[in-house]
Image (cartoon, rainbow, N blue to C red):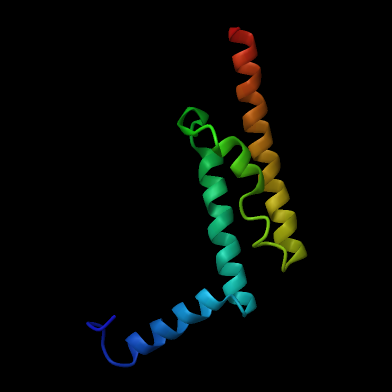
Length: 98
């Protein structure tokens, strides 16, 4: 930050503090989208890359962060549906192999 031009570093620092405090709707949205994006990335990746704890974690990850908005809760639920379908498909594949 110190290497940035004067004014810019203060502006960025102010935004960082706002995001850290999570008091504004924008900050809450930023945090919720950050969590949701991680789940989307996992849903898009091959399930073979998931660690064992991620099966359960991705069902609940980001739920607290979306509580501030009905729309965000709805979006998170849609993403959860994708997660559950992916897990179910994997479980069906495993059953067929056994």
